Image 1: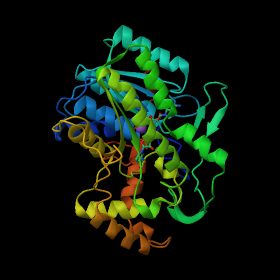
Image 2: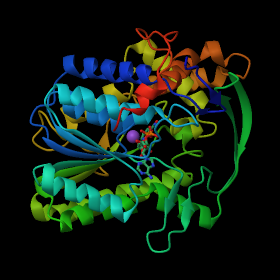
Image 3: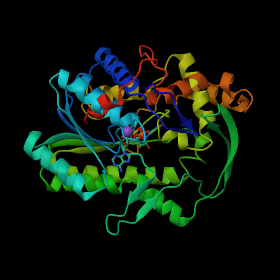
Amino acid sequence: MIIEPVVKGVVARSAHPYGCQQAIRNQINYVSSAEPIVGGPKKVLVLGASSGFGLASRIALAFGGSNADTIGVSFERGPSEKGVGTAGWYNNIFFREEAEKQGLVGKNFVGDAFSTSMRQQVIDYIKVEFGGKLDLVVYSLATGVRPDPETGEMWRSSIKTIGESVTGPTINIETDTMEPMIIDTATEEEIEATKKVMGGEDWESWIDILSEAGVLADGCKTVAYSYIGPEATYPIYHKGTLGRAKTHLHATGDLLNDKLARIGGEAYVSVCKALVTKASVFIPAFSPYILALFKVMQDKGVHEGCIEQMQRLYSQRLYGPHQHVPVDEKRLIRIDDWELDDDVQRQVSQLMAQITPENFTTVGDYQRYKTDFMQLNGFWLDGVDYQERVNLEALKALTP
Ligand code: NAI
Ligand code: NA
């Protein structure tokens, strides 16, 4: 079969396996020649390893100078009668293959990271086959739902404002159009549920359980990812439901840092740059900002994707030249520093004021935005022959 891109709204309904393989190789090539991670970890668990920041973390830690063995946990779907499967499914497979070529472990667990059974499988594997200890745990899950561990009932996150509703344009990638959208205010229940899904509770639970199992090495670090952004986007993000959840995550970082002190460990939250990922395209009214940001950062030569961000995080902040991890006054790592640079933000506000549904494809960097989205799903990559027939049976034989 020939695999065509299928996009519904902002969701990709198909993925190209060999495009995903190419994207993995491109990221490996980038970190192989970038400033290396010195003094980095050797045994790493990545929760949310199959795409976005989690995948980029895994690639940076394995191929960017640290030569880490990694365990990746993700929720993905393989090929079936319904289709070829998700991009993350193939990212897992091709990451593992590349890692093994270098003599590194790239173990994949595919299933629900929120479940007790996943925690147990990972712990058993660490004890029996992974050398017994971890020296870094990366928490990079992004999802809309989390089951209550007590009742099994689902918490669902909402992307809403708190206080006043906001109207702002949103991009439809399927139709290449920009449509006005009203973002409603959240109820108390919605705020609470979003905090349950995207806050720090599950991160804390993972670290507690790993710690009780005795699989955290002395000096073990853990990191989770956050976003803050400029004031102009506060109503839709930082001061909305997602921001509330992130504030909870930040507090969890401090809590875990205290808990890990017992073994000489540390916990951090890294505030990252706004990027196109499977998760971020859902944030309403956010796309004009990303379009303007990409354009300005591209023009200034400071644009980064997930892989550049993660290589910089691990080589310049969490490990590397500094005696102590550099943080701001709230103890957050700021790898969003180039995004929030005064001159960048001044130019971004000017550009955002000019963006309209009629001109957004040319005034902002829509080309980059859409290309990033397509490439997340293995499309639009150089060096891939999209006319070549893909053998579904051969793909079914590949295992995570
Ligand atoms: P993503 O959608 O690319 O990756 C999410 C990962 O979580 C995938 O590996 C997915 O399989 C996994 N996952 C989701 N539900 C799961 C479950 N139940 N069990 C196991 N695995 C599951 O998301 P992205 O954007 O990389 O987000 C990661 C973190 O980075 C989030 O905390 C997000 O808020 C943060 N972040 C994202 C920014 C952006 O612009 N995309 C900016 C700053 C922070
Ligand atoms: Na991720």
